[in-house]
Length: 210
Image 1 (cartoon, helix red, strand yellow):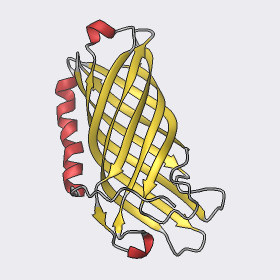
Image 2 (spheres, one colour; image 1 turned 30 degrees about the horizontal axis):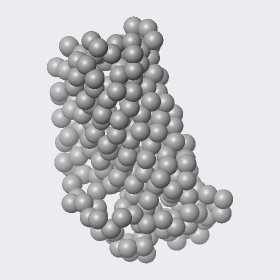
Image 3 (cartoon, rainbow, N blue to C red; image 1 turned 180 degrees about the vertical axis):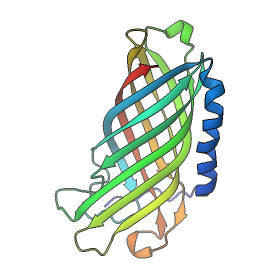
Image 4 (tube, rainbow, N blue to C red; image 1 turned 45 degrees about the vertical axis):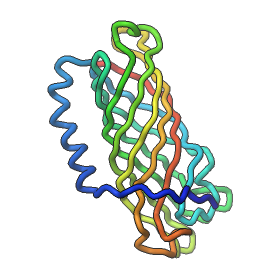
């Protein structure tokens, strides 16, 4: 079993997170009119996970496949992105004590990148950070430790982007995801009485301009 750090981060309400994501949709059209619009389907792996939830298979810290898609609007330096990712089997290990599990994240982010006019067809580094929601699901074999949570969360990371043609490119990035501190509704599901899950995600994406 793995345990998250004891440092407590003040919680944001799910309503405020939803408002942030909805607000980004209103900003999107104005930004898109003068910026680079991209769709980035990706595949990757989670790693370095920590949690206060019962980790019956000791699988949280191990690599686990993740896939998803990002929609990005990127200007000369600044941009926004909406990122959706799913990691099936997140809590499942060799002991097979979980029947099924997954962690799904949806975040809206601010992107800061190297100037486009200097890096159009070379590696373009960027930083990304924002907030959203994390869904945590796990069904154990005995039905005693089922987890079903949707929690406010944040992500922070960076990557590099390169276009090979005017429309096709690729990016590689690493992000860290963590839910905001919450007190557990069911102390029997956690080791500390609080609900915390954090992990890193590394992914390779196909970048498509449209």
